Image 1 (cartoon, rainbow, N blue to C red):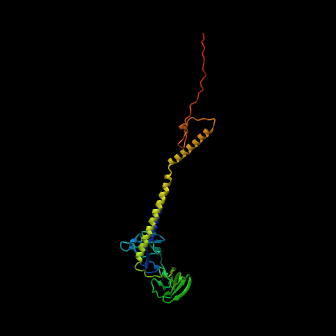
Image 2 (image 1 turned 180 degrees about the vertical axis):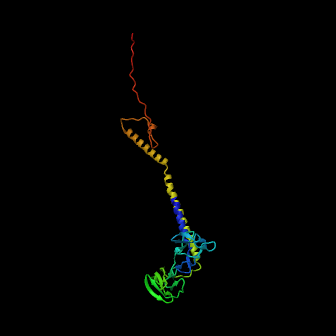
Image 3 (image 1 turned 180 degrees about the horizontal axis):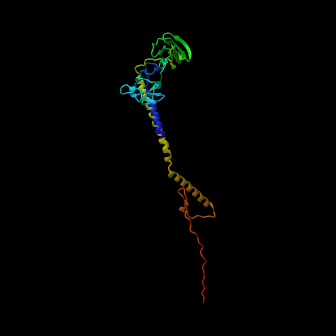
Length: 310
């Protein structure tokens, strides 16, 4: 059973090494903060639809529930896309995509507020060097009001247009952001994540073939390891069986015979003792020696002379 578990683990690792299915969760409108009652659409952008991606979420009332199971409406017959026509404040939480095989996508933290001001900020991590625009928005009035923007509790600047652009963001721009509109209120805080710049190069036409060959090669190596483990295991199991007890008995019997012969020679060397024959009962061919007991010798009674009595 142990070797079977090891082989299964190696085989699963080989399969996972060839799996490239990934998904990314997108939100529309692209904002980490929403007003109560807003419409929001979530979608899993997958590389392979056969992976069976499903939208799930964790909220204060629900844990790991999927779209259509008490919340949202799945688009079509799949759960790749989900829409919420009226989002409530208790639906604030973490949303993600999950496949049948187990891998998950990026996680998105959505905050739903019942207040009058929100900060529209990127819901996904932003690339280092890109420009990021933050919008301080009210629910009922135009969004071109003067707003003050804060990072980690410190005032950055005030913008009369209600939005602020951070040019060429870097890792130092990561943090908690919020905004405030005088007379309307303050928004919740949202975390902005900055990731390293990705350098992409076009793949040569032979890359898919090379990837397929490498995948097949890795699987072949795993199968060879499986065969090697099985051979070693069977060899280890056969070793105890090869020790035949009959062979041990024969060798032991030979030693016993030799010892008897040496004893006989020693006896023959004694000038006072003469042996006319060697009885087969004195020789043992097994690990145990059983010698018949000699009958008890009785001394003959002396001859009795009876006289005639008158």
